[in-house]
Image 1 (cartoon, helix red, strand yellow):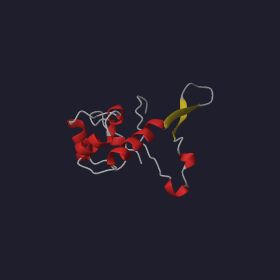
Image 2: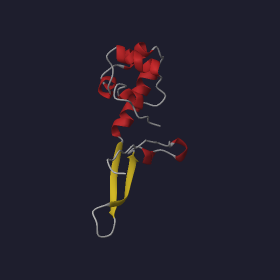
Image 3: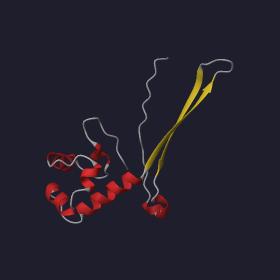
Image 4: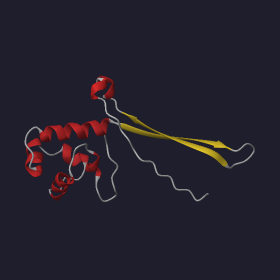
Length: 122
């Protein structure tokens, strides 16, 4: 399960099972991006977070999985017959995990995202 994040939160909130306390500790240590996590040693990640082995390796593995995933957004607009007025807009959000094919059904997880759309039309 990956989470959405606020502009000021940083991308580390997408990592499953990461508490705000650990994310805060990482940020204070200058680790605020996936690249920072990948470039930090396992031991240092564990020392900063106050967690024991294999937390550093597990964190890096989760980041790698997120980085390999793809999120595709597509939209289909159906217009009212004979006009340029959209009658229906269907947005499809698809999560593609290249590692999912190698996972069994018992290990698969549901991924959810919120899509908020604003328009200037009623």
